[in-house]
Image (cartoon, rainbow, N blue to C red; front, side):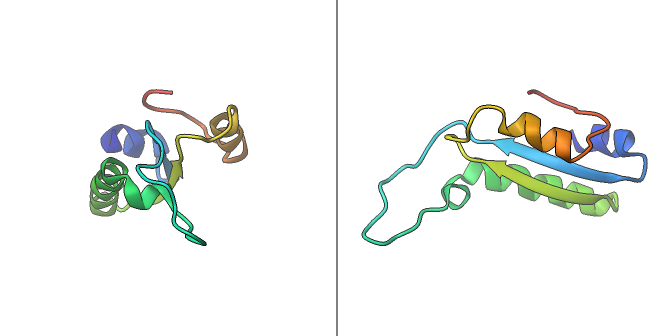
Length: 91
């Protein structure tokens, strides 16, 4: 995926988006705020691998994690406002 993004970016920025497939694994404690990314090892692994490869290829990469309960249409809004020239991968 990173190789395709690098080719499509043509020297521009790359945005990696990870839409979570599941929600919180536990309920928050009293006055505790849960950050879903911190409890999503699959997303952490995906972003770590993408960052390593993007760094190796000297890409200007940004990363966006979309929690499982993200409202419908948010990804489309992000892509529109990011001025994405090309979208690669599953949507």
